[in-house]
Amino acid sequence: MLLIKPGNVISFIISLIFFFGFASVLQAQPDNRYTIAGVVTDRAGNPLAGATVSLRTLSDNNQQGMMTDISGNFKFEKLQPGMYIVSATYLGTGGFLSDTLLLDSKLNRYTLLLNIALNEEAAAVFS
Image (cartoon, rainbow, N blue to C red; front, side):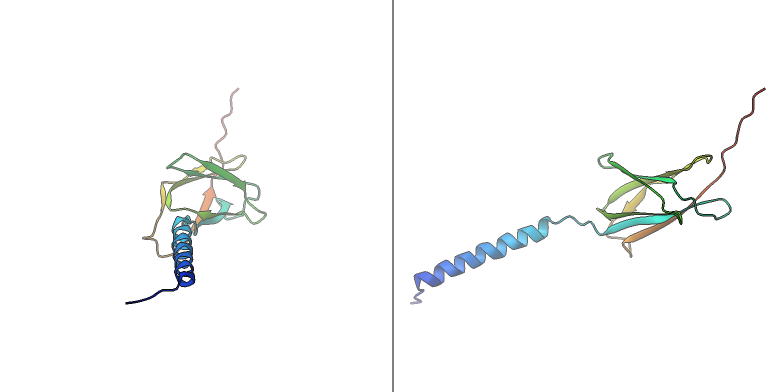
């Protein structure tokens, strides 16, 4: 017959509670390791500082935006797996709207790099 002291039983139960509680916290953490980054340029390849870049999540239609830095760079970090659409605008250009971008475990890297070249907008002249 195996005799267990009352103090050992309590320590064992507390250890089990801690272990399963910690495991559930780890399991509940979102998988937010993905990044969509890139550079916005004009047709000649010159960076467009201050271009507006927006990222829309298709699952909940949530949208976030930012302005490009002086080198035309943008970066959306800590993204969860899902489907996204990127758009970019700059004064005097036609703008850009991406196809649907899928971030999931099938990607062989966690950063998706985009090079966006905006064309000059055609101007209409009326007399």
